[in-house]
Amino acid sequence: RNIITMGAEEAAASAPAKKEKKKPTNLVIPPKKPKLSKAERRALQEAQRAAKAEGGGVGKSKPKKGGADSGAASGKGAASNNKKALSGAEDKRSTAEGSVNGGGAENSGSSASENKKDDKTVSLFSHLPQPKHPTDQHLSSISSTIDNNLHPAVPTLGHLYQTRSLLGGNARCRAMLQTFALLLQSYTPPPDTRDFRVDVDHSLLKPAFQYWTTQCRPHSVSMGNAFSFLKLAVANLERDLEWNEARDILLESLEAYVTERIEYAGKAISRHAGSKIQDKGDVILVFGRSEVINRLLLDAALTDGKTFRVIVVDSRPLLEGRDTLEILSRAGIPCTYVLLNALSYLMMREVTKVFLGASALMSNGSVLSRVGTACVALLANSNHIPVLVGCETYKICNRVQLESITGNELGDAEEVAFTDCARVGPSNRWGEEKKKDGSVLSDWKSNPNLKLLNLMYDLTPSSAVTGIVTEVGILPPSSVAVLLREMNPDSAFKGTD
Image 1: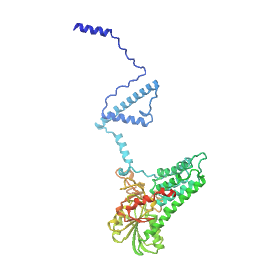
Image 2: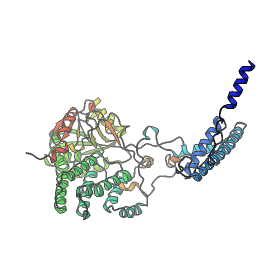
Image 3: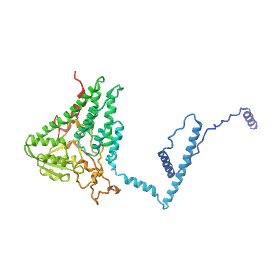
Image 4: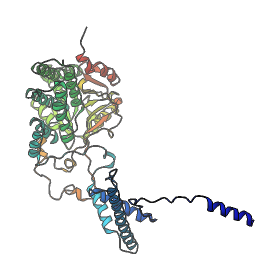
């Protein structure tokens, strides 16, 4: 054994010594992170988030390659941040221990309660965009949009959308197309443009439509279909056309769209639906306000000379049925005005037919309309009363919707709190406060347990609809998909061989 150990020592002495690795001078070894408790880790995360929010966030700035000094500086900064975070964690841990002993985390509890108090959104509809409340800064927004190369007519129309002064799918779509016609008349492409079609689409049409949709109010299905029609009309123009000639073509297309898809469609719907009204004795129920329904009732009474009575059902907060009542009563049509809560008694007693308007028609036959329409249709269906929905074909949507939660629009909750129902026009709800002192809802925002919901639309299932009256005739809801394929806007610009 002594011989073996002596040989091993001689071999180790004769072997060349290993070179020791030299550590670079610019290498910074971060200190080992201490083990933290759950409360300390949470405090560290909150400190890092606060540092990011201040602008000098942890992990946002990356050190440049090839810079030893920058690497050292970043290492020192990280170490200092870790030390601050650890000190903050220790402080929060001590305050937490104090709260267990009876001190209480008053600051965190008060901030959480304030956030909960300020959040007045119903959780089931929190995914929907919040309504834009009109303020006195409208004139300043107009001046800012003019600086952003937007025509003054764009924010002016947007203000009408935002204040609900312009209601109804036809009225909103007609005003949008008229504004686009005004924009085209006052627009000239830049001289160095290669393709005026791209310039018109990206510089004129899209900014205006995005402003209305994002800054004012979500667009309706009728507005979306009309905008797609206009974009398709621009894309189908010849590239070599002069701008004046192309502008005339676009203006003619807009005028033809309004005339054929809105005006003539309303006349055709009036003729088809009017044939279902008897000469004498009918009691027709309508809900809210619909341009096409008012037209067919006026044509049936004044042009065809039919005698019938109309029951106008209305609901808060818009009270659009008052406008319908004024139009029909001025024409000499006998009317009865009731609110939605009295509907069941009237439906069982005297109603013979129900005519309803529509904001959109889904491809599965369901009808999207003003909130309360589904109640009227379902109650009429349960009493075996025919329900006819008047809807132009340009309001057909290619999507399927089964409920009113996924796709809807939120109105201002202040309209629900406006309890005296003393509005004269749609624009009078803004500005002057007419709430009575001592009202239950006058100070609803200060009540943490109270939330108000103002939905604009609801969805009527196809099973509750007897027939859909369009300009092509009265169709069952199951034929909407076929009608959607036939009324494809691409076919309007396909040339014939």
